[in-house]
Amino acid sequence: SQELEQSPQSLIVQEGKNLTINCTSSKTLYGLYWYKQKYGEGLIFLMMLQKGGEEKSHEKITAKLDEKKQQSSLHITASQPSHAGIYLCGADEGTYKYIFGTGTRLKVLA
Amino acid sequence: NAGVTQTPKFRILKIGQSMTLQCTQDMNHNYMYWYRQDPGMGLKLIYYSVGAGITDKGEVPNGYNVSRSTTEDFPLRLELAAPSQTSVYFCASSLTTKRMGGTQYFGPGTRLTVL
Image (cartoon, rainbow over all chains, first blue to last red; front, side):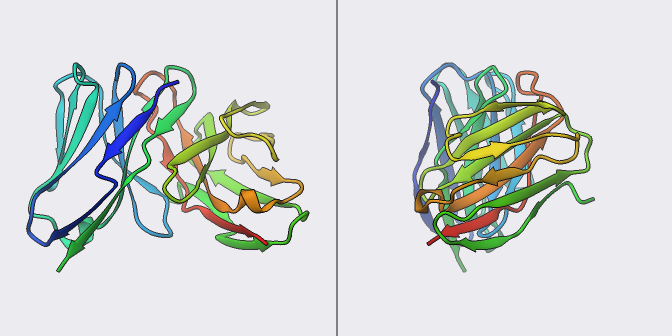
């Protein structure tokens, strides 16, 4: 079965710094979802990438999909304390089932 | 907009007790899912449903049961609670499962502790 590996597992950055989170798949990626989770809350959908080379942005968060590398990256520009949380990537396996990475825990120091 | 709601938010059970985790969505989604999230382990699919009356096992179904009598509701039943079921449980729903067309919307989660 497909697996998604995220790196780094945790990240602490100073407010205003840029950062990148990676999500690598063990199989071909046909597309990918990014979610954000705050402690005690559910997952909030950020964006979906469907095609190789696709890049999407939402406010200061940009995500790209590299099909050849079977990888997606999430980049945050000028991080803020509101960006803190757990970021998860997810992908469907072609059936009704989704898989998720183990998450990257982000802390932003004010 | 309610979206996906879950009750209760927190629960402590004794070993061997039973309980039902409730999940309701008001988006008229056909597809619903139950996940558990253990620390550092990501999300594991317990059960899913493709419509009222149709359910199927996910990756970790042992110790759980589900039913789907209506489009809106997808309760998860724990019959004999065990410490290994201590986790955070999330319910999700999606409109479709067409490849990459099925964005899942999640409830806020139920934090369950079995002692």
